Length: 193
Image (cartoon, rainbow, N blue to C red):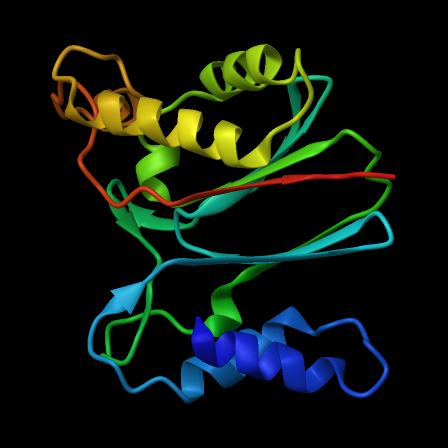
């Protein structure tokens, strides 16, 4: 991701231009020699336009008045086999990423980005509930992110919770009780006037 940041910053010069996310992801990917693979979700926001690029089962959601008005698509080859960028011959490439442009975001909209550990362990309604309770006293993005992350972590270790991952397993004929232990990274943004 540091290579993507470098590519995006280079694109913005000198006039704070709009970043071509596919180009930044491609450049970051080509400049990465690390072993392993990863999903990716990159979002930029300017003048009430959200631009995003997503690979795999990381993603983002947009909430308005505590209700989810948009949830990004995930990419999987099959159950529990998300697209992942990497340097092996079997890894996916940036050309497969989904690019999304959302216009017309409004002040007070909330954007939640998360890795598979969030999306496999929490339903949208659970996040809506946290946002609803968390915005009664004004929006604190750090506190919202922390609260969401803690519940996702709790669900990931709960062997009795009916998680999105457990439901997806049942849809393909597999038995899985509880959440899924996975990396959990969450970023919360708040659109202000």
